[in-house]
Length: 111
Length: 185
Image (cartoon, rainbow over all chains, first blue to last red; front, top):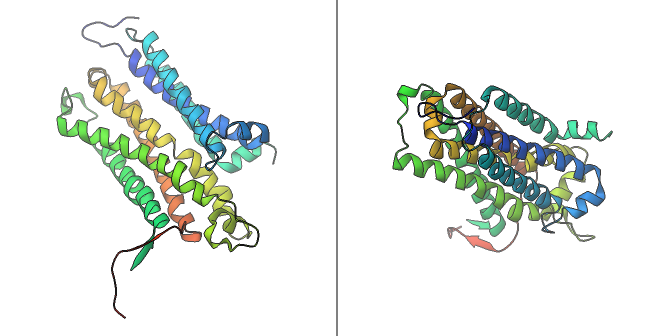
């Protein structure tokens, strides 16, 4: 669906919403994965004093910004079913909040 | 009356950046709730509103970046064998089962969830400033933006709350001493 003069394209907004949620989800998944794997945790030490947190957050922020740029370009003139995009974004956000809660991460890692 | 360099930086991180961000995000939530009707919202943001929104984003990123790259390394520093643990907050906390939870639950949650706040707020502000027409035109967009602003507030409040509690149990101290006031006995 394309935008009309009376209804501006919601594609850029959908791109912003979904990419932000994907970035948060990526952060949560990489954090849990690094907690469960010493090799991955070591690989994510981008700045030694901060430890794996430096890599976890840098990777997530980079993924978020790349995803945002790509989706904003692809959806720049489109209007999407925003209800579905929003529902997916909030589901990802809820999962991200849950995954960062340490007892839940430990449960997934079998601790 | 004196303060150490690390205490001062921790105050800047937690109180100036973090505290301001939590309050500013809450204020923005109230504004967004108030402007949930298109007729109540101006078509373009005012200059003052633009400055406020950009400042909120900058302060949010300043909070997580100073936390992760300045304060957190002091918090997680490894104590040399035989040294007192008072200068090594993480080691001090995990040394006792009665305080270990401040690190294993509090800090491990805080250090990750905090990042959701500036990410979500950057996205919210980008929509309010760059896609104002779509925001004005679509009630669903206004509701989603409000939801993300609420998540930013929740994440910042969680991180800030844990930060306050953890620094009560094991404060980050050390570095040069800065004399604020010379007191007479």
